[in-house]
Amino acid sequence: MFPKYGVPDSANTAWMLVAFALVLLMTPALGLFYGGMVRSKSVLNMMMMCLSAIPIVWIIWLVVGYSLAFGDDRAGLIGSLGSFPGLHHTYGHDPANPTGIPLVGTIPAILFVAFQAGFAMVTVALIAGAVADRMRFVSWVVFAAVWSLLVYIPIAHWVFSAPGLTEAHGGWIVSHLKAIDFAGGTAVEINSGASALVLALLLGRRRGWPKDPMRPHNLPFVMLGAGLLWFGWFGFNAGSALEASGSAALIAVNTLGAGAASMVAWLVVEQVRHGRPTSFGAASGVIAGLVAITPSCSAVTPLGALAVGAVAGAVSSYAIELKFRWRYDDSLDVVGVHFVSGVVGMLMIGLVASASAPAGVDGLFYGGGVDQLWRQIVAVVAVLAYALVVTGVIGLALKYTIGLRADREHEIDGIDDGQHAESAYDFHPTGGG
Image (cartoon, rainbow, N blue to C red; front, side):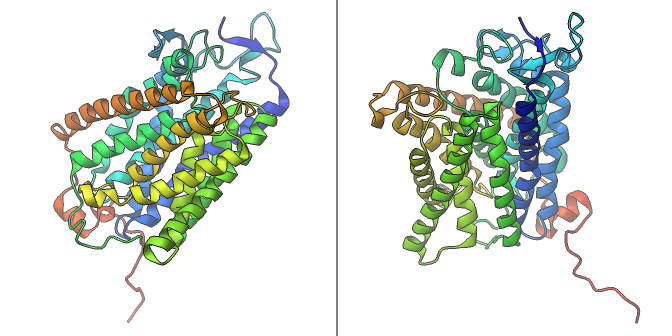
């Protein structure tokens, strides 16, 4: 019967408080990462799009989102609106036991609520990278709110609402299909990447792209953002164990290894193809590896994590150039990095998973056959299809009502000034004559 009441474990609660803070850090860190990639006249708008995901998602999460994602299961598709409305039943004391509070596992339920909200926040913010330089901020706010409710929350229920976690049954991907997605390769990465592609296509290309160079204006921002994201990712992945344990320790090590291997792989590809390893490539490579290990961190050994990261870095370094061949303007390579590496991470589980890891499943290369691989493929296809269709409906509805794209002069003169009446940098000297 949920909620379960009891006394929380102090060590696990302390770790999860840290993990929650690390996950929350990832959204402003993404703002730095993305903000450095755009031109100087767009940096504030990009950071605002990322940062705005925090209040937008939290309000929805508090009122109805958490209940729909983790409430009593309805046919494996969605949670019950009546389970935790306004976060009811996630805090307070048990009338029959004054020392007991609502728990998820061994931690306070309200802490689990906040931890999972951080996942939703950064997922929404990820989409912003595909629409840089050209989307109206008001339209972004409306899109972010509707998308989090109609796209993220149902998929989060499918993937994260495990049987016995907060209710008795669970979402269909985790409880019926039994695909492995420990920390969000589908719900976070594939979901945001597919949705970003749809929104970028509906908005159209940036003015002047691909003819005009649109280089990152601040590579130190990019490097700092990547470093903070890597730091936050330890909370993202290891925190998903919901306890301070050996499993969390292995997951943290796998997170380190995949990011490192992916960075090396990306730089090797750059050296071979272009003759120079770049700081931009190093930062992108780290993120690709972290994306790929997100679903697989509980299913692979430390050596397996290196393989996951190396494949993700190499494949994504090629994938980011497909937008020039296929002529879609994914401004900051959300598709090439997050979608592609998310798919790599999900499928590599079916290949290099080891029963010695916490997930306890052998992949194809460890003698497990294709049983886990087909489950991973079905999960990827299902989330991809749902995200594409529903995001398309949302985007079209907004495009033909309030509009999606900023005014032409705002794009040319700078979307920071046009949308926010601000400039990131003051290039005009002041002083008396």
